[in-house]
View 1 (cartoon, rainbow, N blue to C red):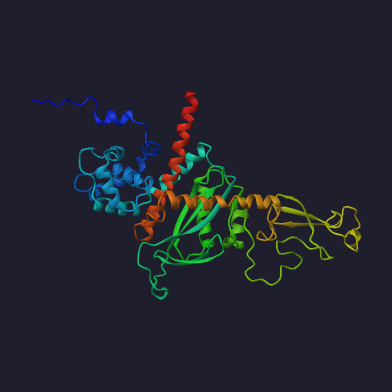
View 2 (cartoon, rainbow, N blue to C red):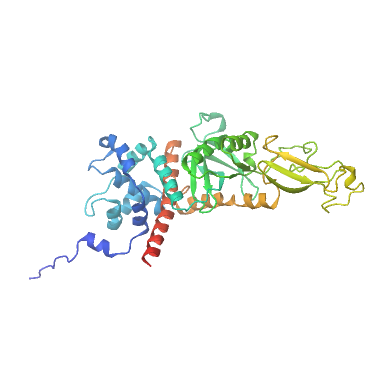
Length: 406
């Protein structure tokens, strides 16, 4: 007669003997208390037949983004066959897992609330308090998000600001691309390239229209106020420059979009550099407090003016022209547009493009988008960015603990 030997360790003991997985480390950094409090008020309607807890279902959705799963079907299959994943999410290791319908109902509940935006804001504040963000410069941009629904002819589209729409923009190579769906607008810091603000709109909404809400969210989420906001030429609107200068006491770094202009403004070159009376570009001589200074190019050795410096000024210092942001905040920026300092700042804008790339490649921003409607798309985006920030926070907390132990 064979007697089966009993277990030496419980399943929990066996789990604890293993190195912590990426998912465990990420979940350990997230505080779900506020989310649970809000969602549990309606929990009886959404708990499912076996009473699955809000926290456990939310952890499963985070796991869905960590492992880049595309559908609820894939999530349920993974939970069914992976007891370690069930344990990490909080489900009974030897019991049943939520059905596809249960997750779908819970996703709908998340989409109708603002709890994920609050969780995202808390994650941003945590990253800033840990010194992971360099908030001196913030990059803002938008990226296409294809809708998981049948496209509609333009004439039949509901232009209500909520429904999927047709969008068109130039890609990084200058090619015109068209898609049916939405736009994800985000702001990132230029150090960690982590998102600090986001918004979802139909694809037809112009980037500049959303800039005001993105700037306001940046201001609310960050304790240290940015000095520069970096954007591409699609945001070249005077109202944005004015808003940033007056309301946020910062400088917009945006290339000029001449929109088919045939001539530059009178007395200025195309980049708003003053032109002297002899027709030469004046030499930039620094700027501060919203004022740029330009000097005679002949005196500075930049040209050989046939009239000499006396043509414009009796002083040996040469003629001086000053431009002020309060005169025209779009044309006159500090540092002056096109200078090495301006270009150095603007080049940091590419961090937001890398952020989009990571969200799409590693966190399923596009490939894992198996939901319909702008609210659910926004929920999907929030789950992706929360997972991204939590990953960086978790890694740095672990590194900090190792340094302290060492």
